[in-house]
Length: 108
Image 1 (cartoon, one colour):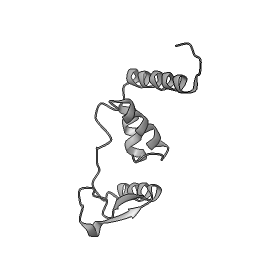
Image 2 (tube, rainbow, N blue to C red):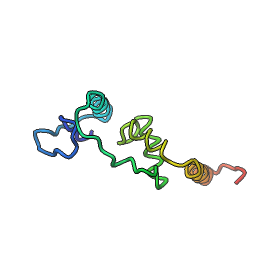
Image 3 (cartoon, one colour):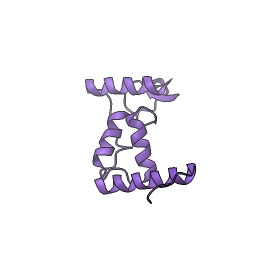
């Protein structure tokens, strides 16, 4: 469950503007409000230089699949804003951790 803002404006924390919604419903309503031009867009998950850490990168990738608290549009924007070299470094780190966790053998 997530806090949903009825008017689409995350800065409006008036109790009458808040209710609980499941992740899927919150994202769907947010996307409808965005298309309609209602609400206030947030950049909390979208630094201009893309993902700065492995945690931000994983959150964005999961957000693209609807598996994190990041809306898919922001997740896609973050992935696109992340330089290719940093994306490659994140992939190397993810595979290093998988090999270590699962005892996989690889070239590195």
